[in-house]
Length: 142
Image (tube, rainbow, N blue to C red; front, side, top):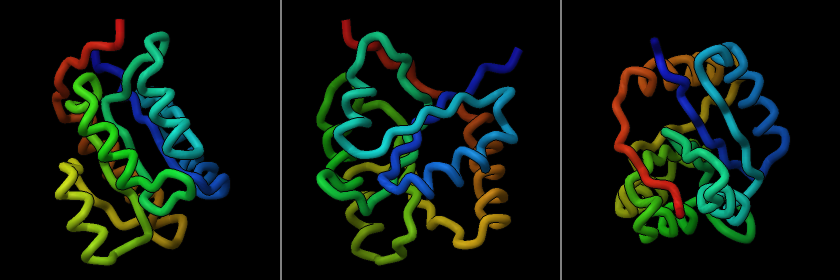
């Protein structure tokens, strides 16, 4: 039996969250997607002992109040969250952003496709790849 892939999608744009949710719906039989509308919300979710940790965190970079890089740094400095797989999904193709994300040990960096059909294809490839991966067991907060 195949496990359900748990994804936490973090983006401050309600429009982008809605489009991503639609793109992920095709995989709802084997993928569980939770959304958070910002960095503080995401960290609260990840640290909540009542919630299951995701297999993959998909993180936007350009968010107000707490940037994606700040969220990534908080994850990497938290001993309980450090092993999580974190994928940056951003419209930014700035080499400085890409370097900064990898310096903070992002698992990968994807540039968000601009038109919806291409974005759906990008999500399909993302799901296919991560469904084949193995993930470390991460102990939830006691």
